[in-house]
Length: 295
Image 1 (cartoon, helix red, strand yellow):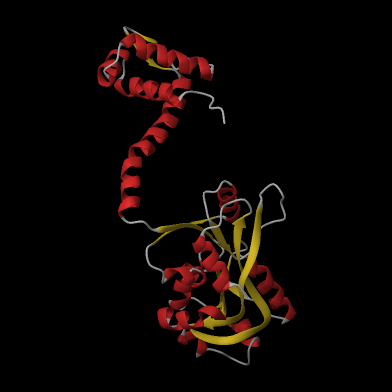
Image 2 (tube, helix red, strand yellow):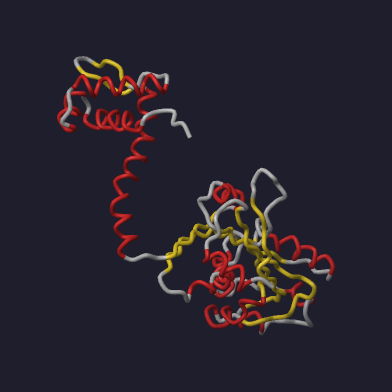
């Protein structure tokens, strides 16, 4: 791979920009001013833009120079961390995995899907939560080892990713004891008389729940919609309303949020997926998640 510029030239430019002058940069680097100037000129030549311009008796950055400095700051700030990172890795070698969690995936489910590796020794888990499309882009660029999501990857050959179904779960309705005491009639008709909390349309299961309402002649009194599943459960625990959730987390809902089941939502399932890069070298921690979670 041919680099568009020399990183040594970039480093000399960075020092000049930080020091504010060629003479101070030369002093810091213990080099001749002429040598520093020549290296910066070579960088300007390779980029095709002037990075400095005269300012009184000194120099100042051009607009292109400010843009180059911003990138150089990122590059060399990371570079300064390299010795420490290498030293720490050698001192305590750990298996590292970087996981993307789609914002539509319930937090309790994410925890369960990662359970196969959480009991392992010497692992370094990094978790990024974000929007589905943003995570796909990061996976395609190999910034992530795996994505956990409530939806499969789209059929896009340019992405070079594929999906694995990890598990599925039926859905029930839950609420605090306050609302369970207010239930009138059988389930699901009682939902016509109760305040409803739902995930927003960013969650794949929302469409299925809306269809289930229609099928069962329920006109929901929606009092809250939440993108964050943990926030939804917190408001439900406070007594704001009843809500649907997968039965996989029934135990956690009862123990953590003191929420009880109201009734079972038949024929509605939520599916959970791992999304992986087709070209990335397999991470043994990823394989452990797939092997122990897959149906």
